[in-house]
Length: 345
Image (cartoon, rainbow, N blue to C red; front, top):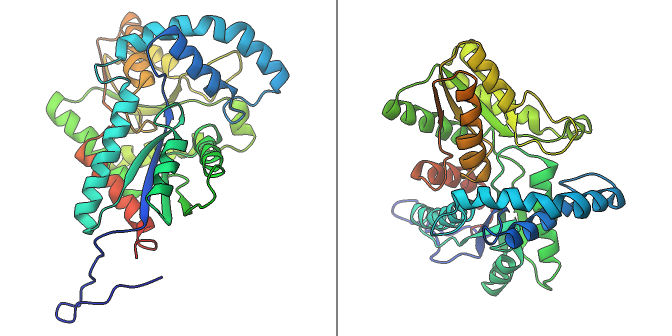
């Protein structure tokens, strides 16, 4: 590794004006359009991944093509249409914006241009396009940050597989550092604490705080996926720093799909239970989602809102994801900096 010469007067390091290092931030993906065709194509790609559904292909193919793809897109299309913006899918919009702001922030902070490219495991912007750009820029060192704070085979490992497939198309490839998880990084925890505290300062504080994470099948956990444990650890650290009383917060899991048992407790059931126990106001936050998407905007913000109110609750609020806020940009840049130090020069 080449170390830049020190400034003889100040003793500081002179950062180079250019770098052969780049960052790739990866999210799950989203339909190209809020149409039946767009949603069906996305589900076809997403649900066929063996990392996502660990069922023998013959059996799963029968279920997917015979029951899911003919019918589920009809329902999901209406939901996507409710959250779609003039700029497109919120998940894609926030991810692309986050990449741009991270690049600007790191370039100013480090005094060197750091390309930050967005990519999706499924859909666009594609991994393949991002890798083609990286090869064109003659990048030698690539840091990959999947925007999944807590590791799971269903998300992080799937992103790793997609990266490997994209790199397999190129003769020359950069050295790669793949960040497995960051849900317990101090910078990330602190960003969540400040984000929630700021929301409460502006909007007041509810009686109960629920940490809702995307669920995974219980079988995945039984086979060794550490995701649920990491989710609980993230929530515990945030709750402790917020000085939350034990009886006024908990962890739940949302977005279960199919007939199998998923990791519990389930978010919808917890919300109904809280209303029945006499909690009139609940704030819900999702520290497993880097940016807002269908699961936070529609599932939590509308579907679970209605469930809580119908069960007797009075006030239900969804605290937004960190999205492309300066707080999120600063936290991720601090996390990324330590992985850049060894490859900058």
